[in-house]
Amino acid sequence: MVEIIPAIMPKSLLELEGAVSRVLGAAEYVQVDVMDGKFVSERSWPFPDFYKTAAPLLSEEDGLPFWDKMSYEFDLMISEPDKFAEKFIIMGAGRIIIHFESAAPGKIREAIRKIKAMNTEVGIAINTSTPNDVLDEFINDTEDRTGFVQFMGIEKIGYQGEPFDERVIPKIKALREKYPDIIISIDGGVNPESAPRLIKAGANRLVAGSAIFGSGDSRAAIEDLMRVV
Image 1 (cartoon, one colour):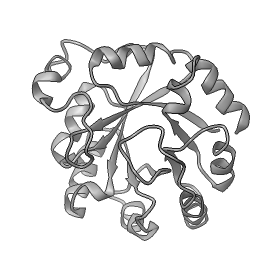
Image 2: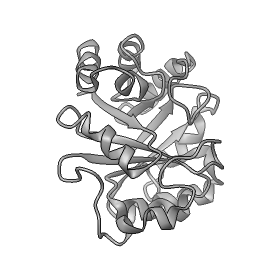
Image 3: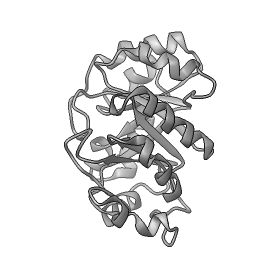
Image 4: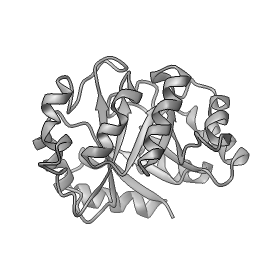
């Protein structure tokens, strides 16, 4: 079963609410891209003033928009994933994604352990220029094993509408051959043209931003992607 996940880069909680409202009933999960302006140059909610902006959610006074109808995965494109990962779970994350390039391996492991200790699904993302071999220690290690891998389908991460990076296709094929049971998610460059190729290569989840929210009808765009996979 292929999962289509709309991706959002909100500048505010209000913007997040508006985007999620456009895909209610058409997707089980949405991905919230979190950027701190350090690991990638852009910033998104709840940065830069994380503790002030996220305070109502961290205190559980408020919940994420439509929390009773939509599940959330947070893609942490930030420089200190070990410091913030647990806080996003408190805020309501059902899945957390950590980028391999965002911190030293020891910090990545620390973040993974914290997430797993809170019974939350965790995935590790890698760029197209990062060799697949770096994933072996996280897939094979029982204690620090990730639940899924997210390949970036674009070269310049932290932006929507970037061109599809062809290098991701052989990376997917190689990982699927090496680890037949691993869940593989693709983020970036996903559209009706690339989607069938990504699924054929071995992907299970497709994360799409501009292909969904750049259309006039976001629910219809999700249905269009489902038809081609």
